[in-house]
Every structure is written in structure tokens, then in C-alpha cells.
Image (cartoon, rainbow, N blue to C red; front, side, top):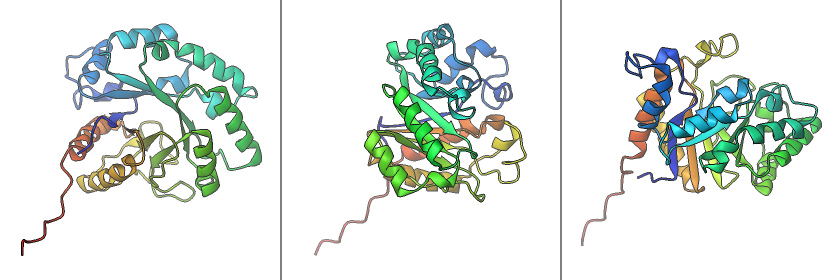
Length: 271
């Protein structure tokens, strides 16, 4: 049975297409977060990738949620996709913007999601090291979308630096990493993006994530997550297949699976 060390949630919560499939039809968008926070233990904030979050926005979000509710944030794209010439400056701006969450002890960590174009090169390794050093006081979860990075020397480096590898579930396409539950830090993070092979390279930010995990797929994921969770103090799981509310429903379904008692081996008959 899963304990408080495994938390299941979604990437984002403010989606208009969730009204009906997830949110009540009469709900207003300012009430999305409080409704969500009554049902899931944390949320991965996605908007922080597109624009530097405003401190007053994050402070207001803490006020609309219970004190037990937590947040993770995607790092701003200047640090992961645009790769600022001076990562320290971008990191400093980002750190100041999230101070309301750190002061309130509501921050679980920062997701550094690097794109497929971020290859395993000497320059990129140096950039990653400098960026992580600039954010060293924060819990960092690093996601590599390129298979180049998934090798023992990278895992060893991350363990040495206390960096947590994101375990990503992606479509089985050439160059993308396989689902591999490797734990490198004190916490671990599973991000489930769906397996929409046909739309992954050609779709937009909605159609790419149009995927609903089946009961069989969730059962296999639950088994892998249980095993990985034994190696870490905190396991975070975030569904990013947000199209049509699939992420929310899959999060509830996976939570139910994880909370079921694991089958026990039969006892030997008395002789």
C-alpha cells in the first residue's frame, strides 16, 4: 500500500476543455484550483515555462489551497529551451519569482525539461552543470527528452550532485528515451506524457497529449512506480496527457491502483 511518499497529480489544471469532463459545468475559472486541490495533493504548474511567474500570482495560489497542498513548477524556457547565455541571471530571476512558495514551504521542486534538441555534448553538459549550480538551493528534477543522456555516466553524475532524474513515459519513437525507472536523488519524479505516436512530432500542445492510459497500462505503471518508490523518500507522479481531462482521470485511477494492497504470496500449508 502506498504511503504519503507517493503523490499523484497532473501537469497543469487550468484547461477550458476540462469543464464538463472534469470540472462542474457551472464552475468559473478562478475556482479551478481550489476544486482541484480538494482532490489531488499537488499540481505541476505549466505556465511558468511560458512566462516568468509573478510572485503575487503564486502567493494568491497558496491562499486558495490548503496548507497541505504543494506545487512543482516547470522552469522558464529561457533556461531549458532558449538556453540563456548567462544561466545564472535567468535562474536568479526565477528564484526571486517563486519566493512565495519557498517561504510558505509549499514548493516540492523545479522541473528542468530539456527538449529533444538538447543533445549529450560537451557544451550542453557544461551548461547543465552551470544551470543546476545556479539553482542549487532548490530541489531539481531533470528531464531529458533525448535518449543520448540516458547512460550510466549521467546517472552517476546526477547522484553525485544530488539531482533527481525525471522518469518520462513517452511514445516509443526513435531517439526518445524508454521508460526506465532509475532513481538518482533523494526524490524521484515520473512524468506521463501519453503514447500518441502519430501526433508527437506533428501535433500542437493539445493534440500531442491526446491519449488516455488503459487499465492495463496503468497497472504496469503502478507496479514499476511501487518498485522505484522503495528507493526514494518521495515519489512524485504527474500526468501530462491533459487533452479532454484524461490526465485528471488517469491520476485518480492510478492513485486507486497504488492504494490497493499488493498481492501477498500464499502461505505454505501447515505440515
